[in-house]
Image (tube, rainbow, N blue to C red; front, side):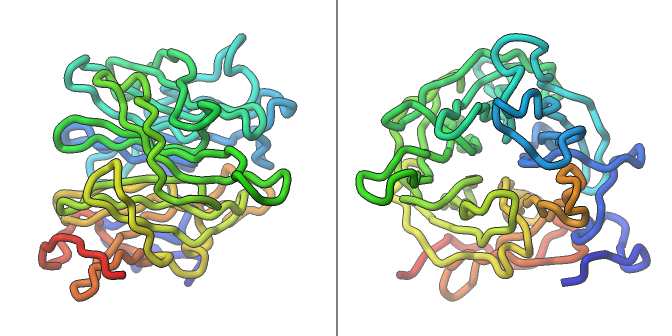
Length: 341
């Protein structure tokens, strides 16, 4: 896989993997551990900035190591305009120290509010999932504090959110609780799913198991009537093969399949999934940590990669494409996902 893309090979309307991404003002996009949400005809890219924190420190003892949640907007997934910090780091009190990340936003039709779920922690396993709301997708978001999750402690870590066609919403998250048996000091790193209250502000705490251990950075999506969940392995700031499971409903039962990526997801970590109706595909957003600068994590690149469904086996597979248009129909026949054992 080339580490750069020649400008002459890129066509208008294409995103470019293997390159530094800049916004419409010519500045590097800084939105790590991010999500791409769509409201109306506009895409919003939410993520964390590691500016002034080049080593990616995140413990409470490291001080104020995050810079607030940023947001960018785009009509075509190619040209992104920086809209500012939509959830700033508090100047005092809860959230001033420690780390906040993985902000994911849903729109609640009943309350007319944009609801952000995000992770805040001081040191593992004491990690909390928090909620904030806004009247506009660009914020500002007002924090409403931590929420209890469907774990034995109520804690939750790396997370994502999903809203189904019927308006019901879910949160998929990492559970760091210790396993019932195993070496001391090891954590389960299971992935679970809870449904959300009607206003999306709290969890119903079902704790449905998707992956039983060794996973983080989860995401889920619906595609042709089926539900797909993904997660990375636990490798810190490093690339990881992408895990995958499928189900007929958000609360399972979930069926795990083989890893869906290659080369440790091309030296990246999966962060989000989004369904694109124009092309009828699912696209993954991934972080290429420490590429190209091993001294500054904020310069890490991003990958936009499609998920393909094999026409014969129904298995999900992630593809690497260097330059492509995610909104262009690929001409693949529509079919219901069927996973074979």
